[in-house]
Structures are given as structure tokens and as C-alpha cells.
Length: 106
Image 1 (cartoon, rainbow, N blue to C red):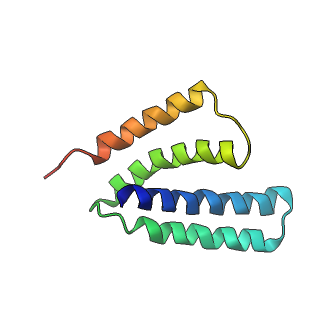
Image 2 (cartoon, rainbow, N blue to C red; image 1 turned 30 degrees about the horizontal axis):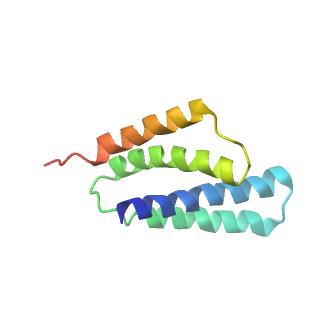
């Protein structure tokens, strides 16, 4: 469930930011921006469903997930094929997320 929440939150944030980008940078209609704002607000709500007690830890770990999802978004939506350095960087981020979230702490 943890991974699903990270993915849903990431899609809401990236999708919301992308819609606002399209509105402001590419002249799309206002409702793109409004939809993006709603998606960004949903991101803030979805992220609170994580079971980890520390806000900072969840958001720091989410940053790594965000990077990975951004690479995939660019590949799937913007048709920008990631190069080996994108994949290496995403892998390093994934390792960082695992280091932060997997150890049992007391």
C-alpha cells in the first residue's frame, strides 16, 4: 500500500504541475491550470495517507520517488527517452528511498 500511495501522490503532483505548465507556457485554456491546481491539492492530501510518523522522512523519501516518476513521465508523456545517466540517477534515488524507509527504527 505504501508504494501505491507514493505513486498516486507522485502522479497527482507531476500531473498537476504539467497541467499548469501547459496552461502558462503553452497557452492551453484556463481549465488546464485549474485542473492542475486541484491535482496539486490532491497530492497534498494523498501524501498524508502514508503510515510513516515523520512528515520530513515521508517527504524526503517521496522526493526520490518523484524523481523516478518524473523520468518515466518525460518518457511516456513528453516522449523524451531517458539516457543512461537518467536511469543511473533514478536508481541512486531509489536506493536512497530504500535506505530511509526500510530499516526498522525505534
